[in-house]
Length: 106
Length: 167
Image (tube, helix red, strand yellow):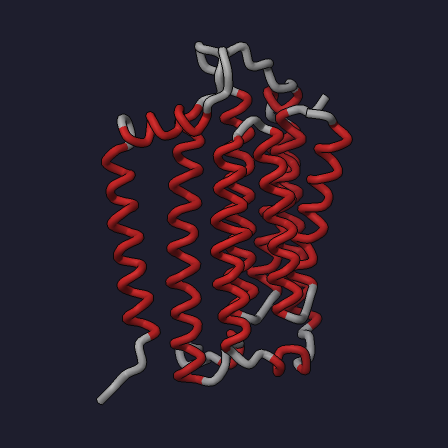
C-alpha cells in the first residue's frame, strides 16, 4: 500500500528539483517555472495531509484544501505579475539573463 | 491507491519536472512543465481531492502555461543556447539542492506517521466541491474576499507594467 511517507518523499523530491532550478538556471523564465514547481510540491504534501487526517463524518479535512485553493490563486497572480516584470525588464535591458543584470553588484 | 499507478505517475511527474530545469530550450521546458503538472493533478485525484485536481489542470496546465508560452514567444531567447555553462556554479547549486534533499529524507524518516497508510473514508459520499465551497463562503469568507482584491490589484499591476510609456 502507498503510505503517507511516499507522498511526502515525492513532494520533497519535487521541491528539491525546483530549488535546484532556482540555484542552477540563469534564465528568469526558467527560474519562475522552478518557483511554480516548489509551490506545487507544497500543495502535494498539504493535500496528502488533508487525506491522511480524516475528520468525523469520515471525509478528508477540507480546511487544508481551501488553503491549497488560496495557494493556487495567489500563485497564478504571482506568475502574471512576474511575467509582466520580465517583459518590462526585457524592454529596458534587452536581456532576461540574471548574469547580465549587475547594476547592484558590489 | 494502486501502488503501481502511484509510482508510475509520481515518476512521470518527477522526470518531467527534472526535464524543466535540464532542457536548455525554454519552449521544451514549458512543455515539460505541462506534463509535470498533469501528473501532479493525477496524484491529487488519487488523494480523493477531485476539485483540487481539476483546478490544477485548469489553472496551471491551461492558463499559466499559455502565459509562459506567450511570453517565451514574445521575447527572443535564442541567445540562451549559445551560452557556456559555468560548471563550478552548477556543481555548487546541485550540492546545495542535494543537502536539502537529504535533510528532507532525514525528517520524513524520523516522522512516525509517515509509515502509516491512509485511513479509509467512511463518509456518505465525497462531494468535495460542495464541502470546499461551503467552507470558502462561511469560515474563510474574509480571506476569500481579500484574495479577490489581490487578483484585482495583480490585474491592474500587470496592465500598468506592460503599458508602453508615452511621453
